[in-house]
Length: 561
Image (cartoon, rainbow, N blue to C red):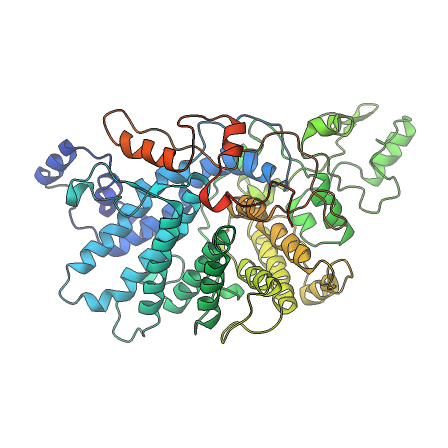
């Protein structure tokens, strides 16, 4: 990958810096007179740059959003509550500076070729990448420029309109459908990206599977507004000859051995701890992912002896007979139970020794390069488990099956769990972190699936599917947060997996900053007004109550049906 990036660096100057709508006319003058600037960058290198840019902006996102906000809002972890920083939303700028411009330039160059049909598949794959990141942007921002975006250089359009979220979904569905048709039409005469495609190496069937899985993401976002549309989209995927990503070998994975977005900032401003809800369920079901997601506390046998020697009692919420005593979680919102929350930062004292009793997130799993670590951060952006759980969820809800998607909800549920465990274990192995599966992985997964608390029982099947879908999203925080918004799960007072009490107002979206005065203010204001947003209001209560289009009819947090 390093060699590819070095080669493409010069070729991406044009695409990354000059195609976004805020470019100025002076830039165009410079580019037309400077012979050192490459005017026709190689599409292969542009594609590499876009794929690489899906990942490389995420250092900021992991620190300021995922670990500090989104995973706390979804209750996968807990940490000190901080304001929603102005450092959030790097996904937005990354889309328009480093991802979308390159994809548009590739299409433009291909369309100008006399033999453009030979590049059909290369062109089609660019839309899959654009939709993948575009969903991440609208998931938190709602209306964004798209159909008129990236037209400053060719059409002198510096004031693109903001497409509504529904218009984005419909546009992206059309683009994905066209891409699926093109990519499925055969590849005998087709040019490819070769190794410049750092995800699939121009395996077009895998690009089709990625496109179909993105269609499932859109289908479920549509559900709160139009279940008939959800049914239609799902049926298209269920009947597609190639289908979505449901096998581990087809996952959309970024596997650069030199990449590490988090590092020492994994604890930036506050340590991240396990919540009571997630830890309780992982312990009850003896989930192999527990030791992958979280680290043990200090309560070893020797530590317990030392505490006993110094007559230091364990906190009341810890059972001294618990065989998994080294894994403890606490309140997601610290204000709801300060008696327990005090132990996040206050260890137990035994003479000169101090023992931390709460479990933190597994820092090596999330930040393998921390403290000079030699592990690798692998990012699976679309997982096979996700596809399997979506199918299980849709079958359970009565959306049916198809010619490609057959079987029962239970079949897909089990397949999703197995895939999730294998994938998380693989991520842990690459990170040189604690793993949850041994050489007997198949038997360990089978034992997990056989537990009464895991098996579908005909009583709360959907909640069980939701719970496993939720657990799988630990490494996809935007998907995790979208999941809890659209479903209202984990559910308050559930007898199966109860959500922790939470008093804090949770923002259900981000704000989109107003453009500089004299640029695209009118279109920005129009989009804010159409969505029912108070312009420039960044308060949590407003961001909670003024929802995105896909979210308007969804249940409140913890109020799932």
